[in-house]
Length: 426
Figure 1 (tube, one colour):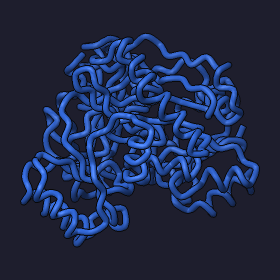
Figure 2 (tube, rainbow, N blue to C red; figure 1 turned 135 degrees about the horizontal axis):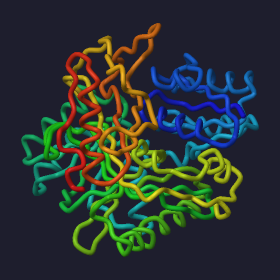
Figure 3 (cartoon, helix red, strand yellow; figure 1 turned 30 degrees about the vertical axis):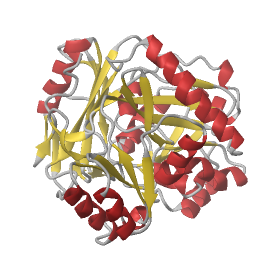
């Protein structure tokens, strides 16, 4: 079976690994891929936003199944194009992808279907936005409405800071067209939860719970990033809370999408804030989270190709989604300076006794090394992004923390940076 995985990050390396484990014989292509995916399949030098190039490749090479990792190709309508050409593809269509590609659309959708979210207003005019922040209590949350690689959210403590943020978005165009509209929300405190389900537009099944670490610094301080680590299960989530999320968020969202004429097929990721008895939706993503996916997929026992096909063929209800009973942890090794300015092109040196995935380390944990921002030149791996590698392990609690940090010490590249507190809640 020929499978094309679109994307170039750690999430895509983890998906490729899971696909390789399938009992179905596969030929894996990754576009554009990275140094790690090159070790599993064949990298194809087509950018993730080149929808025509990807479609032409899939048709020419008779690809049986395409899996979309990142949000950009989904927002550009890759699912619509592939489906119209008679190709099987995993991921929601362009209209459904508005839940992530337009925060204004998402917030309006939540309001329309009475799903709890923070109070908000949206603006496409700087002066009106400045007037709003001047006359409303702080802290406030300011978001670029469009896609911003997880970095388009700011928490502002006062009106002066809010004005600076708004000017950087509207005048300096730090997010380009993604910042043409901003959403300004009331600030909510509580604890955040990443909650992902898979749906075929008829039924749905939750993935195991996870917790990600968004900020660059220990104790969740500093700049927002795409994610510096993740653990499963989320230690703050009970079965009762899961049932409430399904009843108050997931089911009304899926029902609302149907009423909007949207058949949602793929992963729906709800970023939630739990405050007392209340569950608020902070945002939706329309694909697997990164790095949560890395921590989740290493625990997947059922066949991921069969999962993808059950969604496309609309028979998810007949698929047994099975995870093992381990804990898991994913640690991101980043380039110094990320999420702002950083340099690439440094050689990555692995201890000679390290293998990429699936071996037991001395702490008793099974470990995995997924590539994110890397490229392979000959037999050498070079840094090629802000988030460079993901060191993951599964096992029990404290042993996987020790395993991951021990392994991270055996990988070296110039300006390597990682948080030291991932998993301390175990």
